[in-house]
Length: 346
Image 1: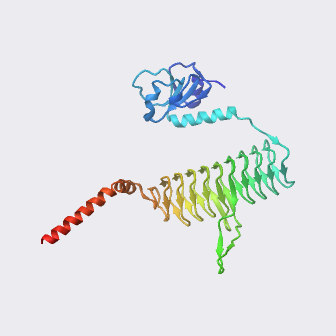
Image 2 (image 1 turned 180 degrees about the vertical axis):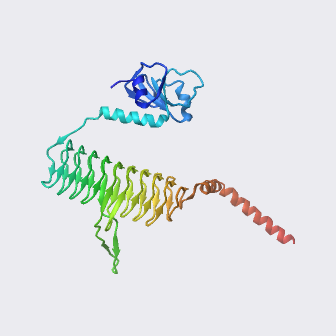
Image 3 (image 1 turned 60 degrees about the vertical axis):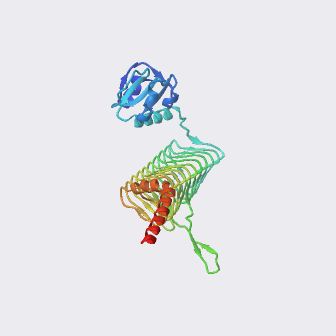
């Protein structure tokens, strides 16, 4: 589908600078732009590409002032990155086929309810007393257990597994292989050295607008709920243990993991491979750099790095010192020799 510059500007509340009639049919990176594509410039680190990009339209911030002539048509917006994301969403909507109906073979228990305009793919399973909302898309080989509720406009991609009693809010997206409600890691050591499994009787609650990455696992609570608050985004291969709670609009990158009963606040950002010990409380607006490990709780607004993680300013200073350790070691050895000589001379 083609989009004209004036139509794009109207959709984004932007201003066209250049040929208003130019059309695009695809998107591209600014450094790989081709005629008929749209790209964006948000980070001035890539500004040099805008002067020779082949893209027909470039989204830029209203504050952008070119240093030389640009052949592409510009559309000036308040935030080029957010505007580009909105356009990608529009393109996805125009390309996507709205699947509806129930494919066979699939299984829907006679006590389950499925809302209007829903889609149930082949080999999907919907268990006893499950409640599926309107416009929910359940792709092939997905499993929905007993007493599960899935609210309107959710998407379960192929192979998603939702255990019994879990609750999914509105507009949630669960990517392929995600597992919601698996048993928490609870085992009691016995006198003979074996471990006795502790029954995990709780569930998982996903509030509205949550997105769960591929092969991410969220364990059910031991007796209560593991809770993922509204707007949370979890990347692929994230592990959330039993009775954890993740606050609103927190984002967690791939391969991060948290042990049981850890609470993460609102608007936090966790990098890839971050590890959190159990029973911690992470405040609001906390940022934790990739591969950091935490074994103690954190107050609001902290920025942390390294393992064990600590304040980012101290972490950067420590990293600089660490690189100089061989030199510092030699200095210390030399100083010790000089001190020894001074003592001998006295």
